[in-house]
Amino acid sequence: MSSIIQLLPDHVANQIAAGEVVQRPASVVKELLENAVDAKATDIKLIIKDAGKALVQVIDNGQGMSVTDARLCFERHATSKIRLAEDLFALGTKGFRGEALASIAAIAHMEMKTKQEQDELGTQIVIEGSKFVSQEAAVLPKGTSFAVKNLFFNIPARRNFLKSDTVEYRHIVDEFQRVALAHPSIHFTFYHNGSEMFNLPISTLRQRVVNVFAGKTNEKLVPVQETTDIVTIQGFVSKPEFAKKGRGEQFFFVNDRFIKSGYLHHAIMAAYDGILKDGAQPSYFLYLDVPPSAIDINIHPTKTEIKFDDEHAMYAILRASIKHSLGQFNIAPVLDFDR
Ligand code: ADP
Ligand code: MG
Image 1 (cartoon, rainbow, N blue to C red):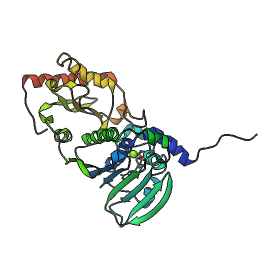
Image 2 (image 1 turned 135 degrees about the vertical axis):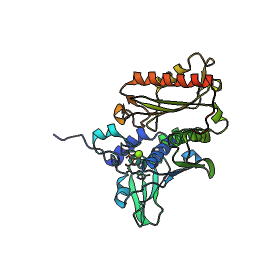
Image 3 (image 1 turned 90 degrees about the horizontal axis):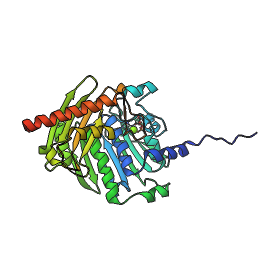
Image 4 (image 1 turned 120 degrees about the vertical axis):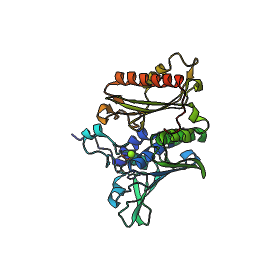
């Protein structure tokens, strides 16, 4: 009897995986920025054209890749970040799935340039729809540049599903802000159609928040600081009188990763209990540090959800520390510009 089951060729498997990882140009922005952060860059440039539909490019001054790795990075499940499943519970990097570049390369035209500090020459690769078009040695600075063009060129349904430039640009700004807020020790610049949209020098956490949102952000912020056995919390919440209708700027990070958590959002709202006008939302920029072994990040391919060992304790600590900070501020309103 003949068999009817076949293993899918790599390029088909990659295209299927891409459906999960890459929803829109902003997904490419997120993956490339996170790779640059993982490569220990101190300077990261994001360049986009037509809201990322024509071009998404990320240039970093990080550690770069060897000639062999430059090719390997486009393979599925190829990663330098973990070796064993156990490593997931001691994770110090944004990436670990080894599928972002394989996925993006399956559904776009990509040009990569990379050089390690110790190498004389760098490597330049062009890959289109999972097919290597060329690989050459080149004179390059240390670091890596990925340019992604013609996203979804081979999935017309996805390409047509993209929203207006205004909407897609907004999604990109969201992703950029999340990474920039998580890493004040990295210099970020962001260009759209040749105009500089952001230029964020290396700074303190407070100054980074202010630089990202500009305007009168500084005077709105109340510092939050708490250290317990299971978590260190730092960051800022907005003074109640600055709360506004609709979602404010609300950012929640765990181990420098932007996380969405309805449950912990509720804890923050509970800390404001009784001091907000009806329907008003505070802004917050909160950074939790927990031992990597106390969380599970491998819940969703985009890694914006997390499972805590002890979610209830986290809720209680977060609520109490914000309540405390808001209370202290009410008694003695101090503007602390140095934090
Ligand atoms: P992951 O980030 O989960 O490892 P990716 O597909 O995003 O998977 O990247 C694959 C590998 O390519 C990474 O593990 C890393 O070794 C290498 N890489 C990707 N981007 C960069 C970069 N900007 N600088 C240096 N190495 C990179
Ligand atoms: Mg990655």
